[in-house]
Length: 298
Image (tube, rainbow, N blue to C red; front, side, top):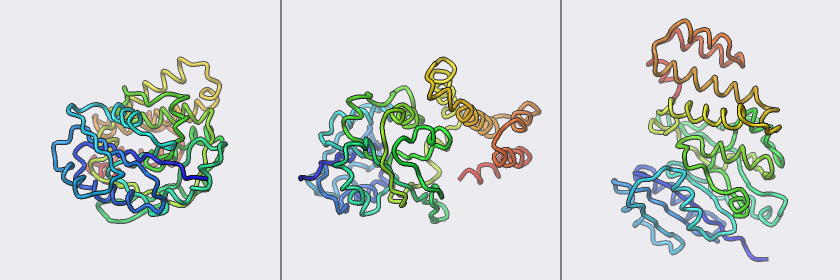
């Protein structure tokens, strides 16, 4: 039985700082039936020079002459790919050498629609690693688990092409939560295979988009909440409503702490917030300088 072809998509805009390590980690995979889609979203730095350092004939380079949203770029790259399996690796992340080969035998099991693994967070400033989730990650029907604690990072996911054919592509109106929106949609119907080993390395640095755009994160999630929870009769979403509301409150409080003056209304929001550990953290941050809060967010 022949190997499945995996299309690995790397979306980037001005990714020269980390792009080499990301591409290198794909080329060095022990699973070698690959198509490497390098999707350059109108970079103005030396990203293209990094690409030229590689002579691998599996690489296909695409350049957008005009910058588009990340999720439009993801969708365009999916449509340009040809593999039966589609994987994403963001340009500041990298894989372990056995990322693909570790689940090769499961690619033939049609009861799994997508594959994911645990993650190592690499903190750029301290040069330290920390495992993302310290519990056994769920397999199969994971929707309710995702609703309680969103543990998936797209750089650690491999999709069957049939998922995109059946459920469509990413919502291009989102700049941050497009991954979240998509996984919450498909996980109601699709089954996941998991490897608990941290086979993905996710780089945490000062320019992570979601870290520096708290307001956008909150507004997008509020839009998602209104669309899928308030204005929906979907029993799967409604069953987990309290978890989505907690996340919405968390993002709102984070935004207010970072962007606005602290006042009694904000403190009241914090006192009503759950879970308890988050409430304690927010109380400490409320009475701390914003500079200290930024340090804790790194």
